[in-house]
Length: 303
Image (cartoon, rainbow, N blue to C red):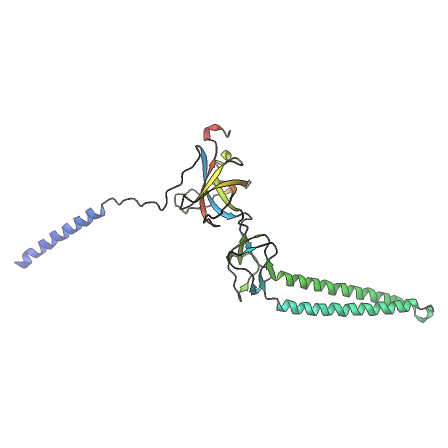
């Protein structure tokens, strides 16, 4: 009897379970709330663009002209530096030793030239011209010229070594702030263009924002037009923008949001604005939503 009713009961139970799961899965899920409400343009007609914060000097990737082991670092992340301040040092012991050798060679060449000039002056001062033959006098004059050339070459070598010694100290090309420091003591610093710079430097006073304006709206953007930028993720953090310049070359758009629906098959005019960061928690590399006061599409570009 038990076996007779067991299979039908299990079948009914399975059917009920399947129906319950289908009903549960078919419920409409509530839409996810946005992390932050989207900002609203303060202008009646406007041009909107995605933007990225950058230094007013643009972000400068610092490298080294001479490869070597890093022996000293003079700065740290967020350090403010002035033009010419040392950033880091490549091991200079070998170059200093070479400089000492070159200076010694220059001193020897200088002494040799002094001796040759002294002999030449003595020979030329003799009243009896028969004491020294003309050929010997000519050879001595040539010897002085050769010694002068040797001294000039030695001094040039000293200058070249001093230049190399100076180049081992990497210095700040502009006033700015150290934004990234990817070089460490004891590491081998490679010369040339690197995927990741040894040090990233830029002037953030004032800070700038690079706005991508769709080429279809580029004609609507006017120099010195009012603009405002909202920090991506918090519309309460915003700042009025001051026009700096247009980048005169229209470039292919790069995806800023990473959204799969974002159009990248277009070109954009890049407009540079600056703003006073003050106490705002805005940093280089962050994204902003920018709204620029602009005439409508039916106004023909007239203000």
